[in-house]
Every structure is written in C-alpha cells, then in structure tokens.
Length: 128
Image (cartoon, rainbow, N blue to C red):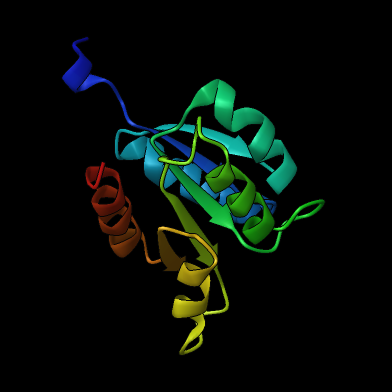
C-alpha cells in the first residue's frame, strides 16, 4: 500500500452506543479507518498515540464535554492541526457560529443523514 492509498483515520468521540455504531459502520463501509473514544478525556489520551486525520466530537460527553476536550486538543502543538468536527443534536440557528467560535473546524448535526454525513466528512478530510 502506497502512502496515497493509506486509509484516512477518523476518531469518533461519542458516548451513545447507537450513534457510535452508526458512524463507525458508515465510515468503515466508505473506506475509513475508525478509532473511537467514549469521552473527552479518553479522546485526549488517545489522540497523540493514534494521530487521526479527523476527529468527530460529540458535544455532550461524560467526564469532559466535547468543547473542553477540543480546546485542550487545539492547545496541544502535536495535534492542533487535526480538524475537530462537532457532532450535536442542538442544531438551532446561531448554534453553528457558537460552536465554530469554540474552536471546532466544522459542525455536523444529529441525527446524521448518511449521504450528507459522508460528503461532509470527505470535505473536511480533503482540507488538509
């Protein structure tokens, strides 16, 4: 496998088992290498070891919420370049701007629409 063919790695940070399974299945079927974390603090521990190409971060997580985890990731030189996309059910008007202001690189609302989700993920990954 050449470097160009290397699968892009995506970390799914989600505590809801159904959401995690759905995202993992959809991403795997579409050719991504998926790693997961169940909380913000677990994500922080795993990111430097696994160096994903993209992080999909739920906002409401146990132990440490997604916003706090993202701020810590973005403050770390080793992983601050990794795009972090907020995954949230609170898709109200004005919410996206607030989320982007917290340091996220993008925003995907739940429940995910599979085709749009894959298109969004591909677009965020191509940005590097």
